[in-house]
Length: 313
Image (cartoon, rainbow, N blue to C red; front, side, top):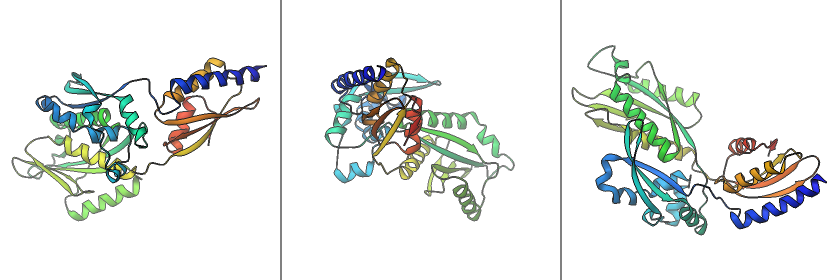
């Protein structure tokens, strides 16, 4: 009796969802938000027009595919408005873009996308060449820590990339020691890491160098967040630049309440991680769903487990 009721319910709810969500990647929130420094308020039009790459990164879109096909998203066509927001004492411009129209653009142009999350470990070694035994006074400096905090906040808000800072006790003072340190980090870390070396260039300037890319910034103060963000973003993109669509099968307990099943279907339909799905079977042993996604194996398994799946393959 329950299985008959369940099959009838599945037919009704799937018909409803096919009209409501078209079983494509949809979301309940109609907007995406990108953030820019309050200092750019006078350049707001340029900031809006220059948001294209950040929108692509927000959605995990393969930028090589965009370049090869010469696709332009034109952010001004999807822009809704802006306001000033305060985060951790930092004033930012909050730019609001229409998610529905952006995702319609991706679908019409056959651009694969998903809700991207990334992480980069930033190893930091600091040194003051003009004063001995003063390395950690740099790291403990309030302005230095504020710059790191701002970079961490903007990376998470704009790019969905979490920055994790790891402070090294010793500073590699020679090119040989730098290469040796890079080798050790490469050996210990699989992907998504970078090294930032902070040193005093002269009596008035600081040097911020990134040995993995050989990029160097010389500045008169602790103002390095932009180059740090670029390094972190490029590191994630270089490691995760392949987007593969996969088909998975998820199994659920057969004795779920109707409300629980409806909630699972709704979350699958609203998720930007799920492209489409269908019910394979519903019997006394299990309820099985098949779905397509650009998520990796581990991410897909974790997502379906959060919905109550007992197996995901």
